[in-house]
Amino acid sequence: MSDASASIPPAQSNPSVPADTVVHATSDGETPRGGSLFAFRRPIPQWASMLLGAACLTLVLLVWWFLTRGSNEERMLGYRSLPSPVETFSTEQMHDLWFDDALTRNLLVTLRRVVLGFMLAAAVAIPLGVLCGCFPWVNSFFAPINVFGRNIPIAALIPLSFSLFGVGEFQKVMFIFIAVVAFIMMDTATAIADVSGRYIDTAFTLGASRLQIILKVLVPLAMPRLFNSVRLLFGLAFGYIMLTELVTEAHSAGGIGHIINVAQRRGHQEPIYLLLIVIPAVALTIDRLLYLIQRSLFPHQYGGGGVLHSAWRGLMHICENLKHLIVKPVPLQASQLASLRGRQTGMPTKKGLD
Image (cartoon, rainbow, N blue to C red; front, top):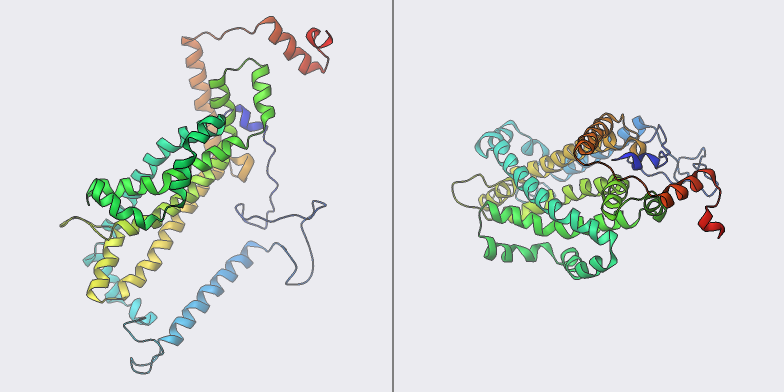
């Protein structure tokens, strides 16, 4: 997010393809073309992409209607297994889900749990991940925890979290923390480690300290990739929360998972299928909002307008000016000035001639 991030070359994008869609190029750098519908990796217009997506949803609804058409005795799948679209999207079912099951309140409870647990995991994992990416010995120290956290079955953590944290709100938050902290740490370390070493060499030549290189070089250059990873992991955490919401305290809003559990015990299938549509819709909406923020923060990487990027740079300049009023910068030494002039002119320094 600092001036060092501006040195990254702008990403090449195809205006007919969404910015978060990967379109590979051939060995000569040209995007494959062709008149055939089945040409490999041929980009399509945005309207065609939306039309194909709508066609897929229509096909799913038609198959659903075909399997549940007719009376209960004539159906391929009975009512207990799969209600028909008309039965699922009826006004009565929508009313019961919205008012009787308190959909809005339970959805906000679920989002609050996910946000708190994810923010706690990010606050712990991102600084540790930065250290792991900068210093291999730190990465080796935390390697067992990362391997354990990334490979343990999440469902196996539910009984453990109940025994450690009870069944209240704190347990839900800590479950999300445990579920995603290793993923965030590993992705942060990878993003930091993948920054080219030439930026570190240049910063050392200019007299930057290790802390300045971490905060003003490595972290800003790794931030676009890190933000994209965090955005995807948030969707993963939103799916994990349903596992722990099966058990809640009495007389409290239990979240979306609690509604599903209650509907299953009562034998009502319609609320479950409605929630299976609501949950991805909410997750997709949050993901798109985060992606808009991502494009605005990193326009050089994702092609956004850059409003948030400009605001952030302005804020950082103000903080730097305030810091310089309090702490006077240390002037460069003669050897550092000579090395800097040599890099700018392309001429070897006196030390290099010797």
